[in-house]
Length: 377
Image 1 (cartoon, rainbow, N blue to C red):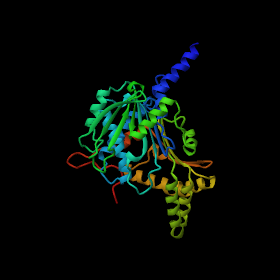
Image 2: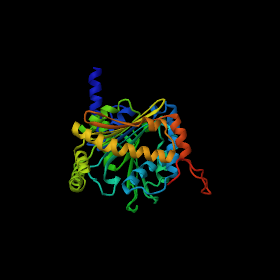
Image 3: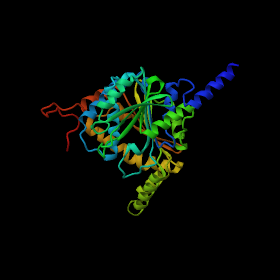
Image 4: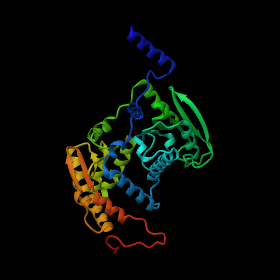
């Protein structure tokens, strides 16, 4: 009898478009994965916070961001703008870094290729965050009004429910053409413990997946790469779309006549499955960047002719010129190959963070700074 009533309840809720039961934050983050994702970024901040180095490394990262000035390509600037928006929203919501438990960003790049300007509004993208405490709708509305997400112009705020989940939308048809969003939907599943940010279609689709209990699957390439991220605090996965592969193949063909070696490398990249970057925190912070190639031979070529010959020597030289001495991180740098995966590995220790913090210390306001590292030649 109880089973029959339960089935009837599920059917009744489905007809009304209501969730049959409260979703968990873990289920919400799974639902935030967009179908056919090209990029997935995940960070378990709660897990990373258990490392004594995480907070210090984050402070160093913020310090470097402060002293960086311009010179960023348009495409990378858009990603930086997205990160700035997220940080701004956190401050406006009164959320401290330790209050955010997990974050997942997934993007389908089917509508974008190299050389185009990024328009997040047209992308199937969901930015999801899980918090220790629920976010109040009033605070969210105020944060959206104060954030420069629409280019700093006056916005129209609206509230609604979708799939039984509260949603706040912000819209301005007169926003500048280069604004990150002209319209933004923010859903509050799990009673505000999780927030979904994205365009209208992307957020509605994510809420539909959450209500149905049917999250999207990782595409084949990303699924294979994700297998190596199980022990990581954070990971970034990227799989090129077919238009991107075509562009890379065209460039490889052009290089064959003037630079056959580079042409061969790029031809391998045109067929690659994707790239994965992982971070694991403990008594040191381990970084691994891997390229998953189509064949073992391609991976061997990438490791020997690109990573071993160009990337690692150049990176070490650049760091040595800046720091002026060998550090544990520089000593830890190495490459390796496992099957069709070529990887670059490095580890950051407490000693490294102390050295980096001193080297990248912002100059005094009068512009005078003590010389650090090897003098410029």
